[in-house]
Each structure stands twice: as C-alpha cells, then as structure tokens.
Image (cartoon, rainbow, N blue to C red):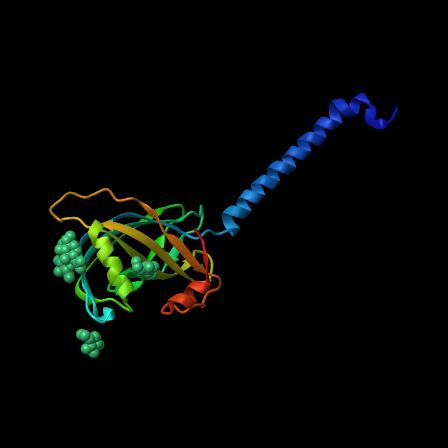
Length: 227
Ligand SMILES: *[C@@H]1O[C@H](CO)[C@@H](O)[C@H](O)[C@H]1NC(C)=O
Ligand SMILES: *[C@@H]1O[C@H](CO)[C@@H](O)[C@H](O)[C@H]1NC(C)=O
Ligand SMILES: *[C@@H]1O[C@H](CO)[C@@H](O)[C@H](O)[C@H]1NC(C)=O
Ligand SMILES: *[C@@H]1O[C@H](CO)[C@@H](O)[C@H](O)[C@H]1NC(C)=O
C-alpha cells in the first residue's frame, strides 16, 4: 500500500492541497485584476449623441473649389473614460467639420479638460458660417451635395484633434476622434428631430511626437483604429 493511498492523505492532506491551490488561484486572480486596473490603459471611447443642422446650403461655383457653404451645426458628443483608476488629461481639442472630404469649418476648439476615471464627459459644439470656402472641393462634391440636398440629410464629418495624457504617465499622445454625422436639416421653428446616435472612431498615435496633424493622409497611416 503506497503512502498516497492512506486514509489520512485523502481525508486531510488533499483538502489542504485544495485549499492552498484555491488560495493561490484567488491571489493570482486578484493580482491579474490589479495589473489590468493599474497597468493597462484604455483609450477613450466616443459617440455622437445628437446633431442638428439649421442651415446647410451650397453655392456651387465653377471651378468647384470656388464653391462656398453656409451652415449652422450643433452637435453633442460623449467621451467615455473606460479606465477604472486613471484620469485622462486632454489638451485643447481642435474641431473641424468637412463635407465630402472638404473642410469648411475649423473655427472652434474645446478647452483643455481633465476627464475623471470611469466618467463620461459631454462636449457640445456649435458652429455657424456664411459663404465659407470648402478646401479642395471638387465637382464630385457638388454632385454629392445636390443628391443629399434632395433628401435633406447631409453626411458631415466631425473631427477632433488633441493631445492626451493618462494621469500618472509622462507620455503625451496625439488623439483623433472622427465622427461621421448624418444630419437632418431642420427648421429652427420645428421641434428637434430624432438623431441616430453614432459611434466615433478613436485613433491614437503609436508613439508620442509622431504624425503631423495638418497632413491628413500621412497622419492616418500612423494611427491604429482603436474602436
Ligand atoms: C476662384 O478663386 C480664385 C482664387 O480665390 C480666383 O483667382 C478665381 O478668379 C476664382 N474663379 C472664379 C471663376 O470665380
Ligand atoms: C464625394 O462624393 C462623390 C460623389 O458622390 C463620392 O463618389 C465620393 O466618394 C465622395 N468623397 C468623399 C471623401 O466622401
Ligand atoms: C448661424 O450662423 C451665423 C454665422 O454665420 C450666425 O450669425 C447665426 O446666429 C447662426 N444662427 C443660429 C440659429 O445659430
Ligand atoms: C437645395 O434644396 C432646396 C430646397 O429643398 C433648394 O431651394 C436649393 O436650391 C437646393 N440647393 C442646391 C444647390 O441644389
């Protein structure tokens, strides 16, 4: 009869082994959770919760790049900080609107702010302009406008450019939030229409200091798609 078959081993020591093993597993689990909570950082998440167009009219011109647009846009974004323990500090957020890939408004910025851990921050942006030029507008853009004008729903892209830093970390990294908005043109006298909440794409630089924010195609190449 081997020692491992003894009653004592089954009745007492196995239990002890199991208790020890479960203590180690529990400790391991707790350590893993702590590592995830403190060492792993998650980028913010963003959604466009609301957007209203009170005016969006194009004055087409020949050549197309001389076209101008008059508009009034109000939009509300939610930024979520999914980190349990880490606040995020954002630098000023530059706001840009484009239609068919052509920027027409870069007039506003959201002031720098501290985003507490686990919280959702609301960012509201209102812009308006009359007869503003559209950068690099093309004949395809004029056609696209005519088609969307038929339906009264316009695809406008909102882009936020900023630099963020997790609290307790030194590295600053450029962050870009791109929200494709499909906005219904509404009469200001009419009550608000239902807006379909949309998810925004959050792009983060691999390393701080890389990427030139004014160079869109090259800049995109340096970013990963985060959400
Ligand atoms: C288009 O804009 C350019 C530069 O602003 C100007 O020189 C040109 O005369 C304009 N063309 C027309 C047809 O208005
Ligand atoms: C602009 O509109 C044209 C015509 O509808 C379309 O083919 C093209 O993909 C649009 N470009 C962008 C950047 O949205
Ligand atoms: C629309 O934008 C213009 C600026 O071009 C501004 O003067 C006007 O007050 C805005 N209207 C609304 C309803 O926000
Ligand atoms: C857009 O549609 C409105 C009516 O819905 C019309 O008055 C306007 O001329 C159209 N604009 C263009 C550039 O087609």
